Image (cartoon, rainbow, N blue to C red; front, side, top):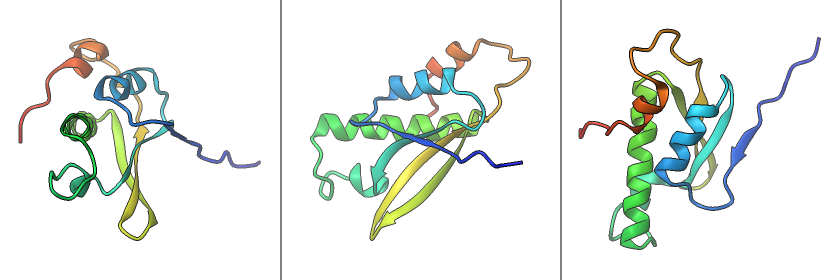
Length: 115
């Protein structure tokens, strides 16, 4: 009996928060999505990252949504070191809640609470 290798989907361009939510809604348990590559905390910092204000704001929303999805039990978040100060940020889909009081799409579109 062989093992199935894990395949991580890597976007060819930066993902948006909405695209991340769409992936979470349709992912089956074990699906893996690399939602960012770099050093997230530094990439969203105005003086250190090479991103525009708009790109930095979208990346911040994406990171917050990924953390929120993990708190809701929808994904596991993992990091893989790809180089010196470089990481692949990966979301791994978990089984969907069996009896949710609200629909998954409504849950995904809900605003994450500010920390």
